[in-house]
Length: 150
Image 1 (cartoon, rainbow, N blue to C red):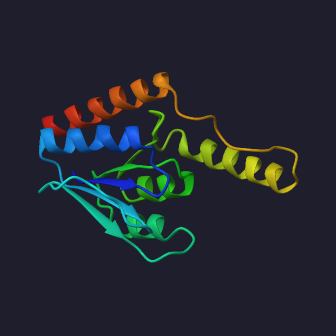
Image 2: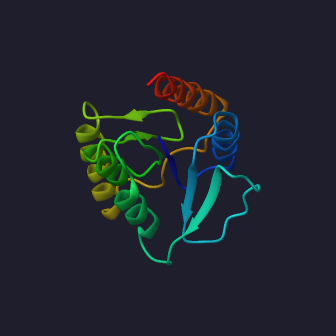
Image 3: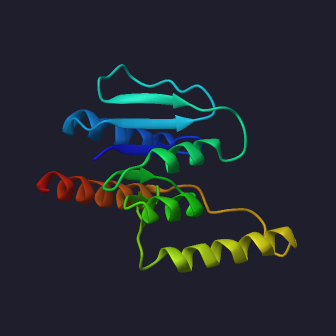
């Protein structure tokens, strides 16, 4: 298993949780972004810088992900692509996307995007809070423990 992080919008607290786990469990982890990232020196953690542009990090991850890899992302279309390739997709709020829920998530995303375009809905999700962080950390730990058992 490799971990891929859609790092352009990944909250710092989530990044720190992922880095600690990668170090502790010796899991190859790539933070993919279209800007420079400062990460601690590590044999397990690396930054991948992609060209600037819309969805370049998502495109890179979707092409590189392999079955069994874990992707940390809030991007629903990327999560869908990851699932289609046999990977796992985990939202920074702790929601695991899978075959049973990704279709509904895509439909809701598309509906909200349309409502935002019509200016009937504004803004996005609220900032991450302590409950979200705990949900992410717990789900992330479960996934890593399950992967280590094979």
